[in-house]
Length: 312
Length: 312
Image (cartoon, rainbow over all chains, first blue to last red; front, side, top):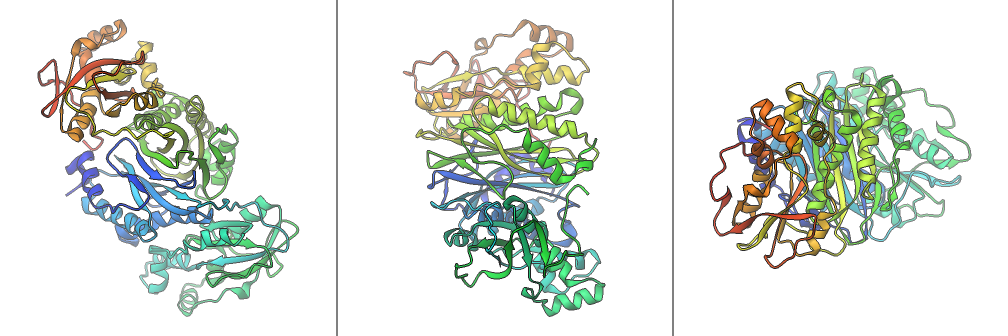
């Protein structure tokens, strides 16, 4: 059965019925607007859009996977501000002939990724469109913390990372060459493992800057360096190449460090901390902040792929 | 120059530079997330998506018009909950060959519509896509009022309307037949005049239900009737047919009441009030709530077009 067969209202009803209700949801889907708790009296908000063929392919992951990934991209942005995600709103544009079950499973994935950290899907909109498109807005609460911006890094700070990099990029390369393994990499692409709690944790520890790694580590640290007016140097030996990644790189003629340093979409969090902060287990040092500008690896410009521009 | 020529980051920079900053914006575009004031400690949120060819056509209005209309559709939803809009987030998907100036003027329209009522564009995302798509999320603050839902209408309540109906639908019909006048109707379609302030006003007066008229008056009152478990009867003589609409209807062989009662997208607000509430000037009575179910016009089923389903 297609989404057109049940119509706009039928589809909204079916999808809404599947959504769990989170603790911050004061009024969920079904009215002109949702009402979400914002106990901090400020709300953090971020929007990301995924377009079929550009950000995802239906043959590279299940609808549920794509839902997880769409939610993760947005929830990670909220965490990167130091906030705890509370809610998602989803605008879904679909070809009318799309299978109803695909739309339902996408909603399940979105809802499950949010639900695991106490957030939920509170509203959205649906429309027919020739291009399958998922636009997600995430909201979050700062819990009294100051938002951690990109522009606060200072020379002498340490650069630290929570979560993985390069796994999703490697998985994407593997899939784009027609392979379905190694599982570690393909699964990392399909469902990023985002260290959500590390965001508010870093804010509480006095992180001077923070960013969600979505364009690629060096590119995103470049955003931090530019906004902060500093230079960042990353230590290559802070990154271990897992055996599956080493094997895949060898098989595909790729450099695993291009994935680790240049690949995006694992949604790791990168942050800078004053040098006297003792980093908790979720955070590991990967470099230092110095005076100057730009991003280097072991003191030199990195020759590999720097990141991703969605128009080029 | 095309949007592809400046790239994703260039485009974001150019558009962001044009956006005025509203009073509720604590942190605007440029970071992982925006931070918006939510003094009520609850936030109202709503998402609407507009797809080219389905919700708008580039030859039927300027980019600025389309920006106004996209913003209005969302801001009206916030007002219909009884809240004051504070912020917009915009996901914009564009063909890479789209003129840069078109994207910039779209942003100008979005920003101007929001700015006029003290809200502003605080963030968003952009991507290339074969289908021009605008997904907007609006946020708002309840200012201590209870949200006004669809489900609170009670038999004996009066049904009242703030703003116009049918003008946008008539304008759309006129445009779709290749005409550019009457100006009153075409402009109503291009830039809806939404009675934003009437939303919080109705909430303050004790409105028992409220809805943004976007599917069509009878269809939207149908949502209220269903959610409230009541019947709604609308008086046809509560609607005056403006001369330009009468003439256009005559020329096109249309019934102007199909527009007034069935047409959407003027983003009027419809609400129900206890019978003892004295309606302020912005609100006029158009019917009554009775026991039962469904929506009637002068006591009988309405034979015209009931509204709009975006998948049929």
